[in-house]
Image (cartoon, rainbow, N blue to C red; front, side, top):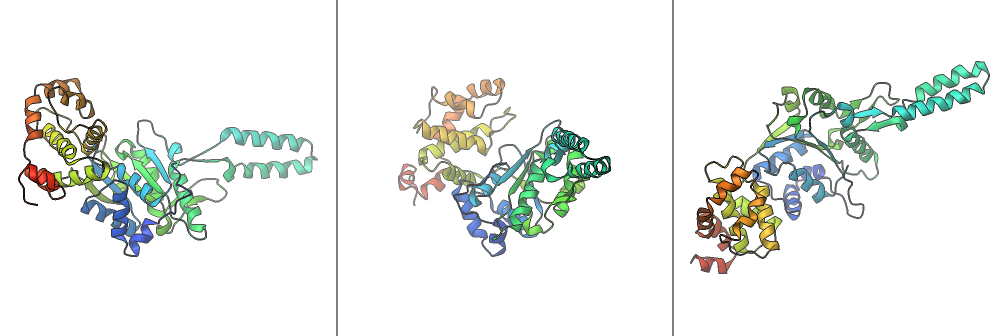
Length: 358
């Protein structure tokens, strides 16, 4: 769990959107440096208004995980996170009982019972057995914790916003984990056998956690029942215009030259035949940040290879790019009608460099 900042006010994005504040929410997200696409943001708002969880899929580095992080940051919400991996168990994400504490509890009560008359021992032990299934012995996983926090927030006065629940890389969950999530996703409740209260969570959809599920489409196909409990969005690679907008938001100190170098370089790398793992927007942000940090405004045969480490993932790819240095340098120095016109619209000096009318 990543707690919210107690010194900052919290904002309920569901309530904000329901009251017509979509553009306000969009502005809050942009202030964090995350600039969502129109369709992506629209689908997210629909998930908020409908109360459904939101499932997003796409290639790595396309901003899927960064989106819920931006929501939590923008609205100052607590965030619970489940990361998919091999061997993930239901009790890790839902609940388990603290067996050791239960045993200690029963031993203590057995010792007390020995000091009582036989007629009172049975009643004491029966009560102790029932009480070992109380909340104090219940260990909540991240999913159950999110629903429990949402229930407590709904009961607070004034009502606090619910937490964000990120189900990250759900394609690694497996069928049993998906099945265990169907009930909370559908009804907002997690039923716990023998638990004194029967269940945890909140049935009211407006009070449930804001659930965002991501999938890289790598491991296995998600089940129909699991998908049906979500609103679905596919994260596509951004256009060059959108990529420039994102880089500008994430690296506000970057000059026009540094922004142009970053986007032109990564766009050129994506176009090289034989590059199996194309750089994503994540790598673009990292490269632009490195250029700002090192005050890089131009590239040459000596400087460029220093930055391969940000977007090259194999030795073969590095060797391939080493053979393409002339091409990469030519592309980063060449006029790009999309990138350079967008930059020129905000930078008169950049417009003059390329003899563009502002």
